[in-house]
Image 1 (spheres, rainbow, N blue to C red):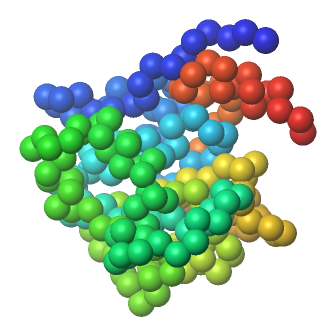
Image 2: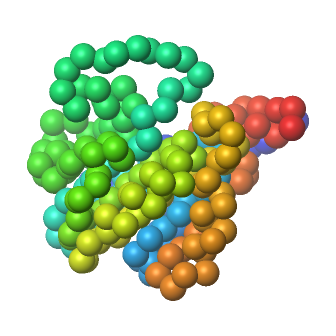
Length: 222
């Protein structure tokens, strides 16, 4: 099964104006939903730019001086492999899990640029386990890989939202590393009708990685 190669770089701010350019209409719809809601769920298969969009939206808010902080978090669940104890402080321990989001930052604002320096000064990494008692004000909070969060972790993360903040929660229910109940789709279904919460769903036609990624997912045994 062949399909058109849609492997161009996903949405990114332009260097001069930092306005967002779209690779497909669903990315534009996602940004409109981000503007209209304080909590946004982005749901879909691998390669649909959920993480990249989240970072791009957050970067645009910081550079437009609409928000003062970007908070990045994700459940620390390993994908079928046990890496054992990781040395160092919290930043060192969480770095391997957050490398995909740093890759997004590199693509959007480069490395060592003025814009990247601004973003780095506003960036805070907070594992879900360390969120209790925190309130994030004037921030864009990103919870990535939310399909690996338990119901308790999702509740903990979502109730950290403070004044003037927005939250983006990404997940692919088909790629959870949890055993047993996967809370993410059930929580989305329960909350999608709450005013102020938006849900955008992507599918294989929205994949912006190598064209074979969509074909692999479509042909994968169900």
